[in-house]
Amino acid sequence: MKNLMIFAALMATAGSAMAMSEGEYVAKSADCAACHTAPDGKNLTGGVHFATPIGDVYSTNITPDIQHGIGNYRFEDFDKALRKGIAKDGHALYPAMPYTSYVKMSEKDMRALYDYLMKEVKPQPVANRDNNISWPLSIRWPMHVWNSVYLEDGEYIPQSEQSAQWNRGAYLVQGAGHCGACHTPRGWAQQEKAVDQQSPVYLSGGEVDGWSAPSLRELNISQEGLVTLLKTGRNAHDAVSGPMGDVITNSTQFMTDADLNSMAVYLLSLKAETPQKPAKPAVSTPAGQQTFMRYCSTCHGVNGEGKVFAIPALAGNLTVNAEDPQTLLRVILNGGQTPVTAEHMANTMPGYGWALSDQQAADLTNTLRASWGNHATEVTPGDVAKARKAGK
Image (cartoon, rainbow, N blue to C red; front, side, top):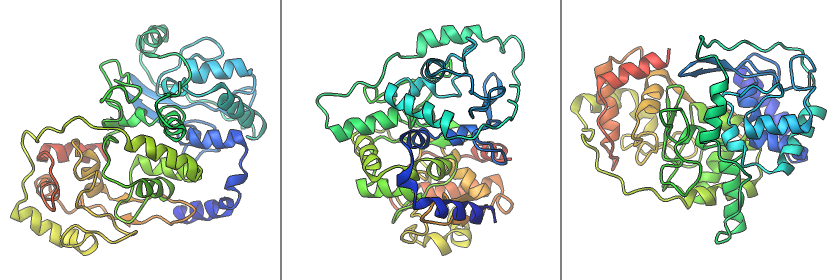
């Protein structure tokens, strides 16, 4: 029922998507709703939970409410918060808010976003929820030091040797889209290890909330296929589930085809380092093959070919072959759902955690990761137990 209501709402607004103000378009591109609208909360009133290494952080109300929101923010205050990580009262924000990416956004886009939030969003008197971080980790001043070390200053600078389309894609991916927040590995201080394509670490894969975000470098997909995936959550052979599904539902489905093509051009230009052979590659086993035939083959096909525009192929699948198997394991154990968009209702895959032991799930996963040309590292029952715990 919830998905039906979302679908109906999207259908009602689909026809006016191109009539969005410039600021609303920036808000969609930056996916503000994903972090500032709780599942059962009012629009942009915060309360979304983020589990961090230092404790629980909750997003804030960014409606123009004077008492609880940003109604008393001047543009300069707003810009400083989003591109410097410093709130109006001077305290440093936690980088759960991706100001390390937003710093690359232009002042023009920032002013459009500010005008949208102040003039088009309804003020909501919803109080902010206190973070749950124990002293002394709750002390904010060390974040100023963190910013001085890890926050790179300045708007995105176009690369003269690249096309306008490539530069537009780089601007969106690195800035408003903040793709690196999930898809780039983090260092010991929770900083993204790289912020642009100059480093092969950038967008080479990361982890967020117990989900593995795959590498976006050297993607085995066409430009058209990638654009369709970002627009609808599926294409002829692939489908999206997990946190990326929310990104498509709330953000990329509303972006213009021109911008999605620019992002695709940029992403498809990224080269990966020569992959090393898995230290211990997955091996298909009779037990895993039996489990596959029982639970998976009816929908995904006996050869892992899937069904065009309906069920993703397992052969060559990015999630199946990912170095970190956590997303694949969570889908097997808990099920998955494609994004709800104006073009599609969600497709749902049931979870089989109730039916499979850790050993059975590991055997199945290894069979998937070693069949139909797939090559990935071995998965252990311990990996399954970790994914099972993360999914609770």
